Length: 119
Picture 1: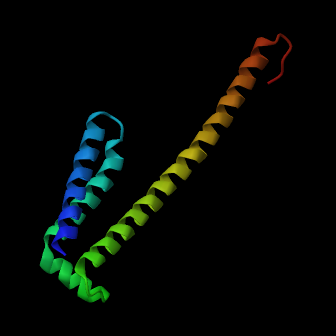
Picture 2: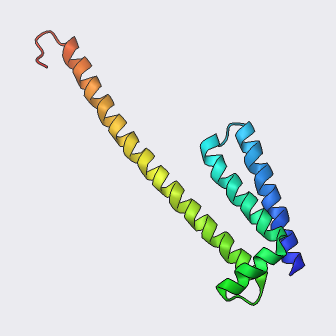
């Protein structure tokens, strides 16, 4: 049990360092890094708080507490991926709307350049 929890602790600490380094180098925006940092910090705390993890495992019906932690990790990442899918979908829609507005503006500019054009 301890080995898996130690591996999880190291993985969470590395994740925190990776996110902080990415923010510092401007590879990831701050508002998106917050959710990654919170998730990694929560999982780090859970991997070190054996009593809390045992309570959660008993509540979920798991005999092996690290298995409960892995299930929580999976659920956290599914929620985060869903959240980022929503963000990406909104950005795609905004990108389409922006391209359409640009096309309309270009059409109006071309029509203004023609001498007998009606707008």
